[in-house]
Length: 221
Image 1 (cartoon, rainbow, N blue to C red):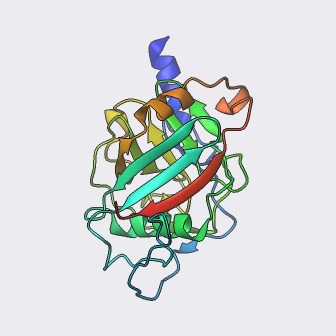
Image 2 (tube, rainbow, N blue to C red):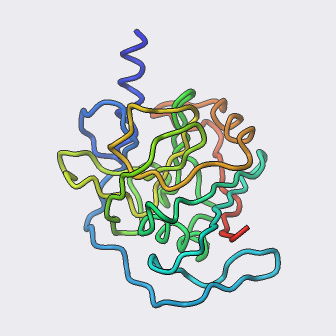
């Protein structure tokens, strides 16, 4: 029975692929998938409160870069990005955060003891910004790690990352190592993540009450 439950969990990590690959963070492929758009170089500037206001480039990332997520009625989580080993994916997610893309979106899929997944503008696992990002598979899935969902190997043999959907690990998940791009690890708010892992869910692991990313921002400290 335990093996069956684990298999069902992994099936959901591939973004909406609809396939039968076991235990994956999943995403539905967008109608057309393109490369992540290039961004002109700029020195990052901060607004009051420390949030970055200028977009970043993968060849000029600050050494210390943090992804902050305030979840309505739950609290704030803070993740330190892996700028050195996943610069393209980090740049993409950071820039979406800087632009306000994630504000108001939900964690649409929560599996206790496995993952909390969000970042889909449609809220059902099928959405994204319309492009994918090159895989940078270099880190392990630890408790509190943040990684990118993706479509399944049958349609995505290069294991390219979703343009916006990510998941947070509720425990170490070595079964996912080597298959997904891990972009950071949690440094604050582990208690908030554990709260999210306990919310009531219904069909397709969707929370009964929306779990909303009230505010997402990027900082250098």
